[in-house]
Length: 558
Image (tube, rainbow, N blue to C red; front, top):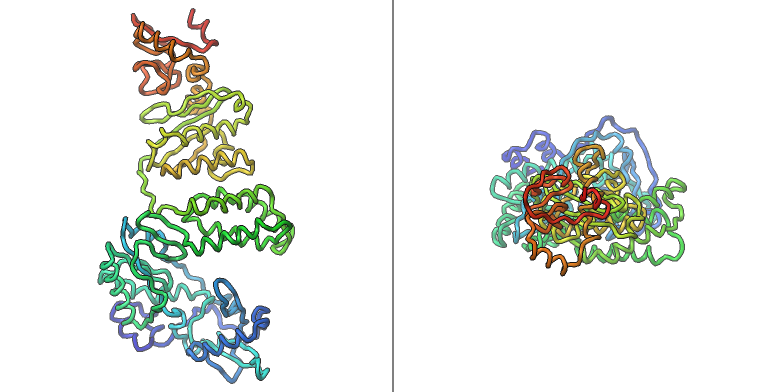
């Protein structure tokens, strides 16, 4: 890259970056390391032919060089396998002496911010990006390694000529090298983001996207960077970037099919095991599921809780290679992922929610459920509990307030809004946010989450003291016999006859949801109500509908 230093100066790169381009990249060392020789890791010694082949290939590419003398620092080699087998350097000896610098990388959120409905995206990838950055001559001997030639059984020493993956400051420094290039491209009209050596180009249509890509590649080429044509994706409304499909038709982050199949296969293997597996294997699968959080927002917290809890205890007791038997709760969570991943695949590219927060206050007593909205004041839920539900815990009943409202059609009025739901039950507050180990409560939490997801409601739960006025109103509404009048109502035919004959002006004991006349008195405060508490009102010369709870009958007669 040294011959491109003048271009870097031309586009305004800082002096240190220009120096790196001209003379080679320098690792920022806190101190110069002592001579050292670290043996290769087992993964490398068990696969000698692959390691030797890779070393020779890197020498042919100019990435590495064979040297006669032992390098100052001989680092260990390892072989890792993700999608394919890779040779890596274990450079912890060097990393311990490198200064850590703050790094801000562009992200998927930055990409989503630039995308609008039906926009086109394309991708480009640098050809072995790190290997394009030459290393300063005096530091090459710090990135050395040694390996035995399988044919001659003699030890051969190597040094790196370039930046390598795994070096502590590599990502930060590589990003600095590309920063002036990206800045210049944006000045010329490029729209997109870069993540290390991956570029996403964005355009309003296909032609606009092609033009954007050409701008970036032209500037980068003048700066000496080479691209991998094989990894380039053509403009589309659905492009793969950083492990996700960015779909501008559905405006969602989606897990690509190949990745989805891979994760589901791992889940199926775990669930198919009749006996034990290891903590490490379980952790890898759970980690895979958790990493998909953009396509399954909230689920990684709600539907992996038991898996994390089981792992935490087991690892603490015996380490990562300890045998583990999955709990029934953990198996349930993994089964849920297996059964629902395809159906629920897709999280919003943008949170297109109104800034106005809607405050709701709810409560559950031993007899009923109640929920009201503040500003404008109105009742959203008012219903009696079935005999079976009255026997449930207070937390269960409080969760029913959430479930029985957010799963209804009336909740659709809150679509696209941020909703703050206040409860005086700390257990409910925690479970709605994080789930529960109790299967019954977990199922309620899941129903609430899915309902809000489907209706595009961003639900925030806040705990509020029972003694505060708003919660007292909610409590009164849940206990009040008026709001639970449905249990004791006359049949609809008789009610219609009475209404037609007498034409009452005002319903004396009602809520917004069950009133029989336009005008009504409520128990809890409601903006639409003509008054609160029948017994506090001075009644005029009108016709009233009065249908009290049996417990209130004597008081009404008095």
